[in-house]
Every structure is written in structure tokens, then in C-alpha cells.
Image (tube, rainbow, N blue to C red):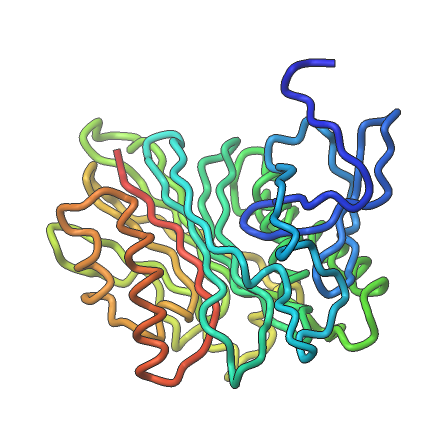
Length: 321
């Protein structure tokens, strides 16, 4: 066994991305396991003990993993314990990704249904907003985030459509085994970008941008904000088929923009977009490191309290290099 291999047993607390799960169906011979989320939904794929995206953690006894527990009895679901941020080096960029559960809606302790993820293989970074009652959005965002991180091969529009279709099938499988109260129409909206070399100018880069639903992408240059997507045109209220996986009959469009080293591109969910204007978001990154994303997530909590807007938040901040 290599030194990187972690041993698991049923019931272990497992961190996958920024969410906490409980290990089950652990096979010590095959060195695989599955995980179940706080709503009792089992993710429809097995992890290897050596999967670098999976981490076993030790929790204090007061924070044991609660699976399928109704939060109305006063026991907080485990997703409430977590907010996270991480910085990744990708081709031609440094990326900060982070998500946060936010503050409870009407004193109800819900899961974090937003995600942020990167695809090291292709350089894509995404912010994902899960949608669906009673934890269905949590399941949808988790599966989509995992597949966008692991299954993209070269990152073209055709490759993205392939993974979205594949991931949609896995979501439907997961929902069939979820508790009855989980919304079977659960899905997600998302936005993302990646940085590529410019084909003609060594001093420039190409930013590829995608968006579904009301997630947004904003370019930060010299302290100014430029929107690279138009959320009104993607409104899920006007067109519910913009929600993945219902949108899979419509090919995903990848737009390209010329950018410069030093530019920052932000992909974010409406938990941030409904709290701040693009210009206000930019102010958190001017003259600061990519860890400014943590400050932005924190500031959104205070703004949500003032506005009475309670939502999760997901952010991918890409520094062009």
C-alpha cells in the first residue's frame, strides 16, 4: 500500500470538496467506498481510497456526522459546519474556489447547495448553484461538481456537453434512491471559465466562458468590472429549461474573450450576485491576493442579513497569468 492511501471504515466522516459525508459500503479489499449525504442520499459512484479529492477527518463528538436527521429537532446538519476556500494552480491561471452555506432561512438549517470546483485536466473552473427542495440541490451540485472535476478530457463544448449528459444520468440514478421528500426535479445552474494561450499574441490570453441560468461571469481589469454574461437572458424564471439536466437538449455555447495577464475573471452564483453589483465585487480583489475570495464570501453574509436574502454562495476567481 502506498503511503498516500487512507484506510476507511463504515461511518467515517469524509470530506469531499467542501461538504461532509458519511462513509458506507466500504470494501477494504477493493479499497473503495461510497458516501451518503446528510439527507440520506447515496452518491451513485464509488471512490478509491487513493482519491485525492476525498479526505477522512476527525470531528469532535459534538459534531458527529448526522445522516438523515431532521434539523427541526435542534441537531444541526453537518453541512452547516463547513465553509471552505482553496487556491489551485492551473494552466495560465491561479484559481481560488470557495463556497459557503450562508445563513439559515427562517431559522431552518439547510444544506449548502452551492459548489465551486476545478478541472485540473482541462483548466476549467466552475461555480455551481444546486436547485431542488429538501436537499435535492445538494445532491445535484455535488454530482455535477464531481463530474466536471473528474470527467472532462479536453474541455471543448462537445466535451462539456458529454459530461453534462453523463452527469445528468447519474443524478437521476441518485434521486431514485433518495428519501421521498427529495425533489426529483433537482438540478443545477452554473458558470465557469478557463484560460488558454492566445493563438497569435504571446502577451494576451483567451478566456473561454460558459453560463447556464442566473450564475454570472465578470471580468476585473484595472479596477473596473465588465460583465461577460447576461443573467437576464439566462433567467431560469423565464426559461426553466436552463436548469441542468433539463437543458441538455440544447448544446452548451462557449464564448471566447481576449484577456490580459493580471485580469481576474469571477464566476459566481446568485448568492453573491444578488448581494453585490459587479463593481462592489471588484473592490474585494483590487490590489489583493486571490484569498480575497474569503473576504467576499464573508461580506455576503452581512449583506444577506441586511437584505433579508438567504442563500448559499459559490465562487471561482481566476487570475490570468
